[in-house]
Length: 145
Image 1: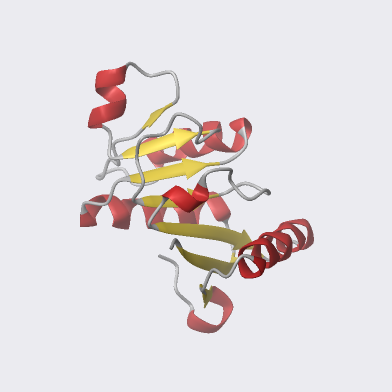
Image 2: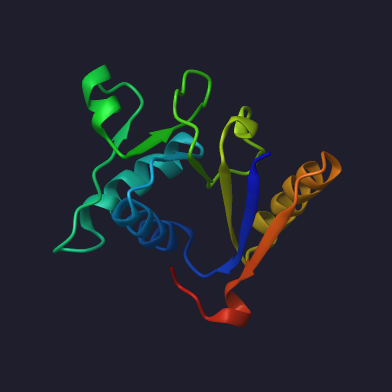
C-alpha cells in the first residue's frame, strides 16, 4: 500500500520542492512530480536556477522517450502513461489519479487557506481508503528539506 506523507506549513512550496527533489536525486530515487501546468513550468525554471553549483536532472512530458527514461525526475501533469512507481510528489490541489501505483506519495502544503483546505480534502480521501499517513509539520520541526 502506498505510504502517504503530508509536509505541512511549507513557507514556499516551489523552493521547498526544489530542496526536497535535490535530496531525492542525491539519494538515487526516481521521482515523479505532478501539478497544474503553470506550477510545473515554474518548478522547471526553479530547478535550473535554485542552486548555482548543483543541477537536478529533470524533464517534462513531451520529451523524447530516451530523455524520459534517463531522467531521475519527471514533471507530469497526468500520471496516465507514467511507468515509474517509486516516489510521487503532489504539488496540485487534487488527489492525483493513479497515486496508488507508487510506493510513496508526498503531499506538499503551504499555510495558505486555499492550499490547506484542499489538503484537508486529500487527507480525508486517503484516510477514508485506509492509507496510513505521516505528518511532517514544518512549523514545529523547522525542517526546510
